[in-house]
Structure formats: structure tokens, C-alpha cells
Amino acid sequence: MKYTDKFGMNLSKIGLGTGRFGTVVSEEMSFEMLDLFYEQGGNVIDTARNYYEWVENGRGKSEQTIGKWMAARGVRDKVCISTKGGVRNEGKTFFINLSRENLLEECKQSLEALQTDYLDIYLLHRDEPERNVEEIVESLQAVRERGQAKVIGVCNWAAARVKAANAYACENNLTPFQIVQTWWSIAAYTPNMWNDPTTTWMDEEMYAYLKENDLLAMAYTSQAKGFFQKAIRDGYENVDSFLKHRIATDENLCRLEKIQEYCRKNGVSPTAVVNGYITDNDLDGIALVSCSKPEQLEDILNHCDDSVDTEWIRQFEVG
Image (cartoon, rainbow, N blue to C red):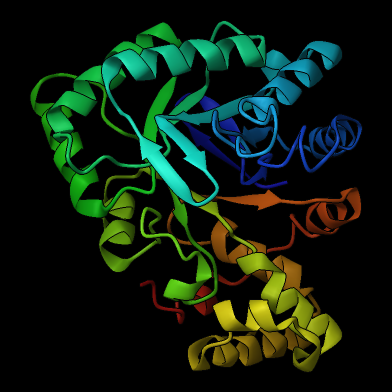
């Protein structure tokens, strides 16, 4: 496992996404994957208050499942929990509320669900553009104190908003955002990938800002939905049409050829290359991986130590 030293923590560069845990993925299988991840050296576990809340009793289930697992294994002080708040949703419809009152209440609920008295990382899951960044920064200070959060940050925020928020924080001796979670993978982004105007992706402006300020990027959908692995393993013609629709642009087909060639020349797996694009990148990043079955996670963990040449990575433009 590769690690990065940030914020006084030694963080695994593979993070486990747990959006389906406790709902689509049973508690038993969730525990199995959490055990596997932890035993292989993983310690960054990513969740959110609103994951799968559109299913019956889904809100908070991911957090509750992680809380039960930590309590059963006695590992709270050995893992880094990242959770997110400020959003309610029904399917693809999001209701964003970054008021201080709402954030404090959600933070309290997260602590209870996770069975902990502190949070390692607390992120705002979406931006609320109508609310000024000054108010949001001030509110998040109170949330940080309530949750005893070591680090605060945002998910799905545009670079301009992050810059404005951090400028205000620095001018007023407040804690700035130190982590940004966004859609980032070796695939060139297309609007079809997420079909959600409230999400963001790693563009050139954000990449440059995070790198210049030594901030940490958390990459969700870092596997590009498994497109490259499936195309190389099963043949491009056998990739399902929906995945092709989302990812198979001319640019990404060109990247597919380059990944295949790199794998042949260097004797590494496509999974190693896809992960390495994040974990060996010039920008310090954590690749968040979400799996439905233990064998999928095992494949990722089996190749998480493989290195990818940073110079080769640089050929793929961000944005």
C-alpha cells in the first residue's frame, strides 16, 4: 500500500468508498470488504450522510455500518474516516443546505452513526452557489469544532469557489479547506460520465491550485467505472453499451490503446495503471474505489503497490 503523510496522518493512497454499504451491499459483505481493506493496509474510509438515502431506511446506513464495524474490530484510532454532509437527495435530485444549523445537526448525526466522538475529515458534499462563501467558511468552523474534525474540505466545488473560500479563511485566521474531492481518473472527462450538473471534475484550474498549495485531492470514480479494465480483459466489443456511451470518446479510446501498450511493455495490470494514475501522480491524491464484491476489491489491493511512471502519466492532460 502506498501512503501520503498529510495533516499529521499517514493516509493510504487507496481509499475505500462505501456508498452502498448497509443497503445494496449487505452488512455482512460490507464487514468482509472492510476487513480485507484494513488487513491489506488501507486506512482511508470514505462515506457520506446521504448515501443511498433514496432506498428505505437508507440515510446514514453507510455511516452506521462503518460505525458497527469499527466498534466490533476496535480500530477507530487506526483508520481515517471521511464523511460528507449538507445534502439530502431523492435519486438524482439534490437538496443542498449549507446553513450552520443544518450542518451542525448533520455532523451530530454522523458522529452518532459512526459511534465516534471525532471525525478525521469532514467535507461539504455539494456547493450551494447562492450562499456566499464567507458564511459557509464561518459555519464550517463551528462544524469542525463540534465534530472535532482534524481536516475540513469540500466535494464537488468549482476551483473559483474553493479559492475564494480559502482566501477568506486565510485573511480572517480561520481554518481553510485542505481537501477537495472530485471526479478524477485516467479517463478524459465527458458530460455523460455523471449526468449531474452538481458534480465537478478535475480540470486544469483545480489541478494547478491543489498542486501549488500542496492540498490533497480525493478522486471519486477513480476507476472510470472499470471501463479500461473491462475493455482490455474482455475486449472492447464486449463492454456494455451504457458504459461505452459514458466513456468511449475518441480521446478515451486513444488512452485505452496507450494503457494496453504500457501494460504489455511493463508487465503490469490495467488496474495498476488506472490506480497509479492517481497514486503516482504529481498531484498528491487518494484514489477512492467502490466495489460491490470482495473479489473486485481484492484485485485492486493486489496491484496497489505497483508503480506507474510519472513521466508517462504526464502525457494525459487534465481537463
